[in-house]
Length: 208
Image 1 (spheres, rainbow, N blue to C red):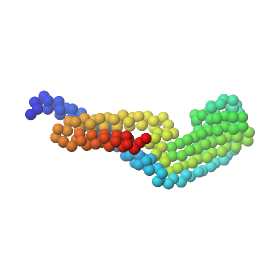
Image 2 (cartoon, helix red, strand yellow):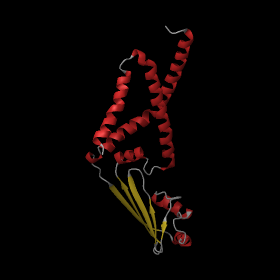
Image 3 (tube, rainbow, N blue to C red):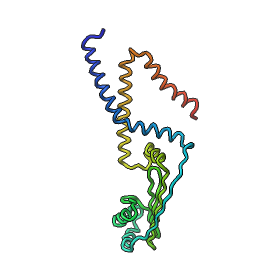
Image 4 (spheres, rainbow, N blue to C red):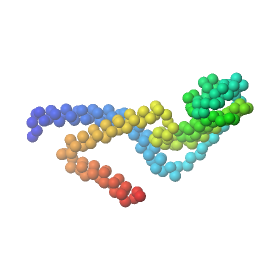
């Protein structure tokens, strides 16, 4: 029999572990479902057919804005002027503010990668012709790119970091709970060991 002091300490740590375990699990729930689902879609990508949808737009930049571009033409890799970026956002619903551009003597080119697709925009600095092409590869590709953090921006990168910390808390508190209940559950450590041995054996034997 445990003495009252030991029982109180055990009860205290159990309460803390359960508290942090359920809080971290609540924070991780949607993310873990997303990552589990996209883990399947990424692992079976060869069996999932994707039909890219390509859309194009061509417009002529107003002369005043074309003059703004010619002022900036010597500044390679600079973003488009704000006036030009605002006009493109209003007229074409394409957002290029702050995006680096490749400037040459006759053309300005912007690569605009995005989750689940790709896009590019070019401007002929002589005629003012602006061409925009957008490729969408569907929701599965979009979710797969979220899983990988591909072309998702700073906000999603921060989310991935927070999610990873919450998942670590969830896993470690779960491990501690397993330890505290293992005396009454003989199968605990064999199952944990199995979870370590299976991926280790597969990695050694089948990954070269």
